[in-house]
Length: 294
Image (cartoon, rainbow, N blue to C red; front, side, top):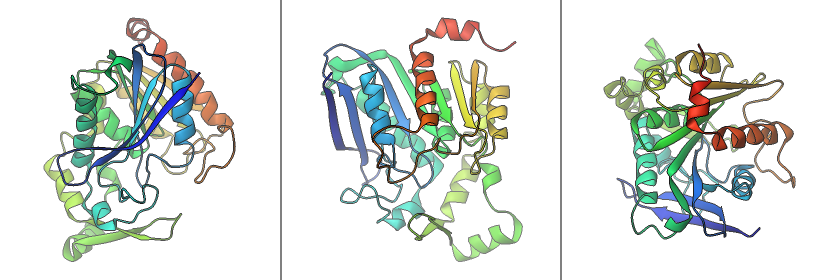
């Protein structure tokens, strides 16, 4: 099977910074179910195994799209490095929701170049970590989404902000910094990140969005995730109207992957998750929703 890979398409959003996008699909000209993948915090579309994951989806007959959030800190010339740290500092949750919406709308344009490859009735979101929370909110807002998969997803944004003295110091200085453990860079968060959240808190409450879902939801988490507690997956399962829970014993936050990834095969934990994801995505919504909890 011949796989087509189109890298670094510049999709225009609502700012001057484009949404850098990859498309991966088989050359067979027939409508394919669409998967849109949302990376997590300090992530990017070319991290570790995501290219290999995209190819695996394409080989299974999916049209796979992955993208960099417009303000994730990478650049057109350096899509795997945080070279634009001011953009990183200007990022916020509503901007990421806007980016996903622009990606969906771009795919759905009548003159989309690869329209013959799309099954417009089968549009699915996958989000990892923070991207899982963002994908959940968008899935609740966007009626064209068919199914949702969250991988190691955070279940609450509010609790991840500092409080009291630390918050006041952030407000006073206007910026705080976090170390990127991989590159040792000091990455900024401008205080607008917090004010944007407070101004849009109802929309950005993941519990509300999850309860509003009207589609099947596969919730995936590793038992040895030290970045996002496995308890978050339990909250998603409690809230989601049509959940399926997949707990992976011994798996970490990225299911055995790392960056860079130099092996020729996916890590075992991620391969297992993908097989379960394929089953979930090809099952009918009616079947999945009939088997809902309770």
